[in-house]
Length: 225
Image (tube, rainbow, N blue to C red; front, side, top):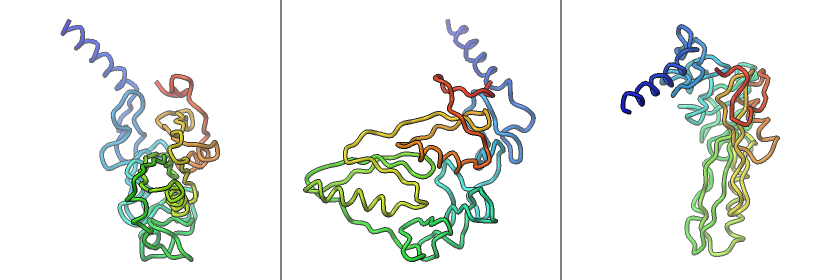
């Protein structure tokens, strides 16, 4: 039985490795495809199907590590439709980026520290599901003595959201939907959203020049192995 398990595991690994070409997953080369634990080597991101550095000033924004190591993610950089990290905007104390991006709250063009301290004390607990402009999601707990105060905190989250594409559930509302999508026929994108508009905005965020379609019922895309 042990030998059968090892043979099965080796077969799975072989299936995952078979379609990889020379250099796949390394900087400047095509992202890995198929059954793989990482599309690109450590420190790289899959951007438009190719592995490249990310997170540094002037580099593409990192999708899995929340944008940038320094500065903020800005679509307007280099007059491109893509998103790049900018060290001269978007951080607290600097101007907001041209697209309104700010790590805190954008107030009259200046990026300011987001207001804090609200809804951290109270006898009642509420949860809201938050979908960011990358279509990632997380939950936030709100504590208040009355629901009206919790609702005010929920609205503050919406008002303080950067890049204008933040979706927040109702208090104790349903979680967002998860959709597997294909970029130019390739898979690997799993996007959370409440609205079709949010899903479309995230697709444009990841690749504005790609053709996007939904994966099949099994999460597979046409060009996946």
